[in-house]
Image 1 (cartoon, rainbow, N blue to C red):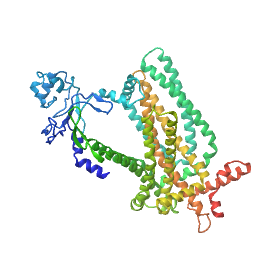
Image 2: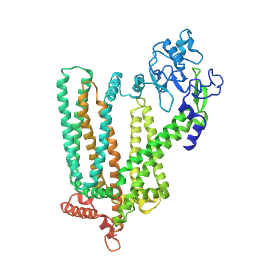
Image 3: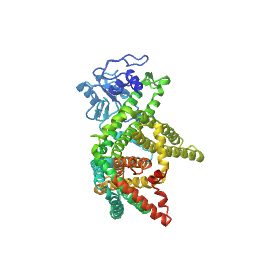
Image 4: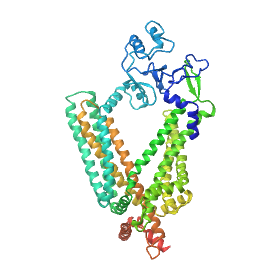
Length: 612
């Protein structure tokens, strides 16, 4: 990937991307070399630093680019120019010629070629894009057709325009609600640290109240707006009424399903509290764990920015080649034109590598906490100590684990691309086989991701290589498969309830705020954007907590496998986890007397280890 970046910069792609180039192959803001067979090439454009499109709204929807003659100009038109006389006056006043190079400003209103060589008027007000030296219209409404081509589910362009106007009108509310979801996620993390014993029940009660309250509010708003909509017959009112009905029905179905799941899992909730309590202690001793999503997200943003920049470099690299219109395009010839495929593979692998580094860092810190008997003897910063071990000893382990995920993810993405391209063309059997393969690869990817995470934990405990750690982790997980299903599922479900709480709270606040704008804007899309962002934020924060619970469970399983509490084989686990084991044994005995399945699921690992 470093070679690809260096190649694209060395071939001049960086200059063409940042400074821009005209339709004749000239890079703006510098002297250029003549391109054989191309008129107006090889010009000295030192004082013309901006790219100007004669018709910026003429967009090629097939190739997703602006289909217009591009010129280098010295300044962008900062106000609308309605006639050729205005364009001529702008050139004489600012020294910026907006017509093709072969026309002089004095010929704009007299030369018949001006109809083709001058911009389509009225010329919209434009401003240079920061760092990229392109003149872009201030009013981006002319790009609506391009957006319509990208959003295929919208068949009526007026619907898209109303959706976009709703987002633009409500942008302050959207930003405020996104900030609210961030604050709620951080508050929930603080609550987890200090009241983990009652957190499960608090979350359960709040989710029940939130689901009932949200569903009731939606039906109330629907009934209220239905009465008011009968008096005011507008398209926006009809859209909002239909959206409210869909939201209310969806919320009702979701609430019923949620209640059924909670009813089934109510007996397992008490067994999860102890593990949550120990995880809360981990966050008390390792407060920097809370900030892991920020650092990971920051590193991912840096890498994605680099990746997109190099991809743009690749889009402008190559040799100048005349196209069918007589203008210049830059194309790579030979095997080098496939470099972007390798670049895509690098995107997947390095993104997975960064996420795996986070998992290894968290696992190393939690393992240090768990296997330190005297918590006062913990390192000053276990997180930094874990990062140091990762960099010095375990980068190969993380690279191999992320590469395995990449090997599974790439075929799945290729199959998804094929399925999208053949949509409506393949027969039912082929479509079913494609979907089955995609589903199987998705399941395999999720299983390997979970196994990798536990392999990183085993590496942090034993300092073994990836394959050995994966084998050890797999054996431990198989030996305790029922306990993994019983405890981790409940823990993940409770964290899912936390995500639901944040999304419901943010969505409810959004409904109340956006309801005041229902008469002049459609708020379907703003509410969806806010809820999606709230879920992503909650997922980023609570996934760290979920990761800590999984690492603690594997440490607990290994601890009970190799120790039985006797002298010389004392447990490393916290006292609360010891109570957890005792409660599990009691539950097993009570359920065993009743002949239930609960006793079989809670087989104590410690007794199995001591008997062997």
